[in-house]
Length: 298
Ligand SMILES: Cc1ncc(C[n+]2csc(CCOP(=O)(O)OP(=O)(O)O)c2C)c(N)n1
Ligand SMILES: [Mg+2]
Image (cartoon, rainbow, N blue to C red; front, side, top):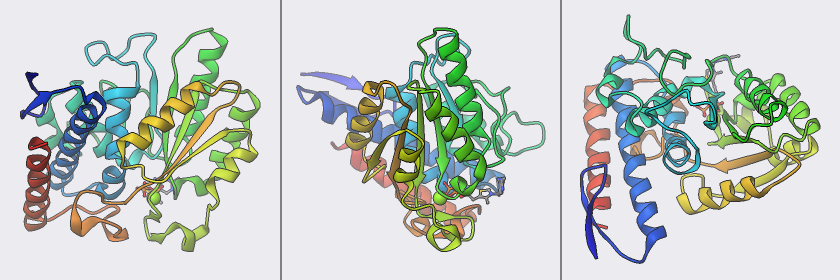
């Protein structure tokens, strides 16, 4: 047994239980990402916490385990690409990038400030951001183009893109899906954050996209349904299966909880695009602090 300092600042025992240790470490990072989201949105007095929190675990998984990336060399040629098609969840992406070392965590407090490089939706001058996004439906087309370009150039990088379940009501998503399936882009993974809510209510009430997986399958995608997209074992299994899939793109449709990790935000459409006030900020940070302490005891 040897002691190791985790990046999140608490000590843990290394044992033979590698996978459990990995998950605990990932959960600590995800908890830090959630703190970053709340801090950024509170500081900006604007932004989108709900979907950022539902995706905090997949952001963490992608940047801390799945993708071939190097924060010290954000533009390296063979890096895997990530496109946040649901660009309004920039606070989640920025918090993951900051905690992964692309830029100082402290800068998250400048979200949406005049003159800050961290604006409300992703821009390509931000270290680690591969594509500007925010107009729902468009990012996935850019990701498909990147995957096609990679194939044409005989390169080995993979392309990941994250969409919202409200976003997939956009027709452009299905045009992109048709083309990706047609061109057999097995270097492409389309992830749908199925948190069940969009800006003004339940996706099934506004315009139902269900069954989501069947629609991607109709466009010749390999479909993986993840019952709990806030669970690292399930995410790991899904991304492994995606990597092993040849001759077709993969769609990972993951069920998540919007607002995950902050009790009063969970499953509440009202927290889609609203900042916590000072009192709500203090409550959220206290909850996350306790969650972090509980993980340190593991
Ligand atoms: C083309 C376009 N129309 C409308 C909007 C405004 N808008 C921002 S977020 C959002 C709802 C998205 O819901 P969902 O995709 O489910 O996101 P999540 O729940 O993951 O936050 C809308 C309508 C936009 N950004 N782009
Ligand atoms: Mg949603």
